[in-house]
Amino acid sequence: MGLYALLALISAVAMASSGIIARFSGLAAAELTFYRLAVGGLCLLLFVGLSGRLGVLKGKPDWRMAVNGVLLASFMLSFLSAIEYISLANAIMLVYLAPPLSAFIAHWLLQEKLDLPDSSLIVLSFFGFAMLQQFKFDLVLDAAQLPGFLFGLLSLFAYSGFLLLNRRSLPAHSQLQRTFYQLLIGACCVLPFLTTMNMPSADKLIWIALAGIFPGFIAIYCAIIALQHLPTRVYATLAYLEPVTVILAGWWLFNESLSTLQLAGVLLIISTGLLLALRHKPAKAVVAVADAVRL
Image 1 (tube, rainbow, N blue to C red):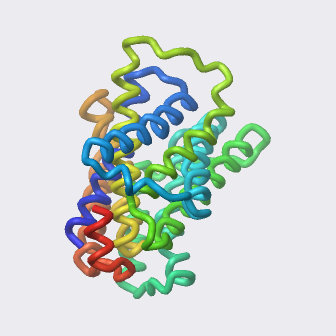
Image 2 (image 1 turned 90 degrees about the horizontal axis):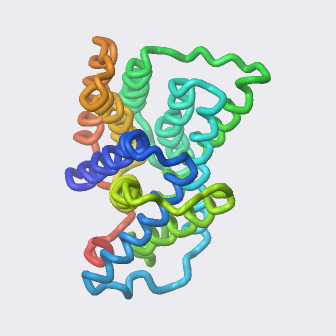
């Protein structure tokens, strides 16, 4: 459990780096999403090539990989579209209903039974997340904000689908293979939105590379490994480290205020994540021989 919980935490922190990269790079939302997925796929290709394991990418992707690639792009683009109509706090609150929603769906569909302590810890983790947002959910469903609400819901369901479908992958497909095709298919899905994309300037190349390495390759690869081994309820709670990282990065790098309420939310999220991780053993879906091949 310790290794896979650590990978889930690495994934959450790497995911959060996209916000920092967006601020410093000045890249448009669709451009950043494309580079994150496309360059992430290239980084993975380079990684397996240098390690002499190009063979793990052979084989035609199955429908799960294709759907997850679409879900990955939909989650990112829908969230970015939502914040054009509603506040960032409201959009984040909507999309981060996905982790607890996924945990409760897994209870019914994946036989990952939730007991009262698990359910309580999940609710507490979401409460901690609401504390990070300082309980600011002032969404009004009028003509101006309704598109943002709908995009937020689409992002929520796409993220939930991504989490759940990666729990039901076929053991025959390596984690590197699934990561590569999901990144590649996701990047292709973003292409139609790049109508005004120009060649990046030299000063943006470093940010493009960082977007591909951290919130692209590392974040998605670690997430896919962790999702296959951790119960959904554990991964879902640990995923809240992403907004925690965003809040702390804003305080540290951009001199944004960090209230006592937000600090209490940080501590609550970390505590519930650790408690859930300690309560459960790794999922039994993947045998040890397959693990050795994938990792």
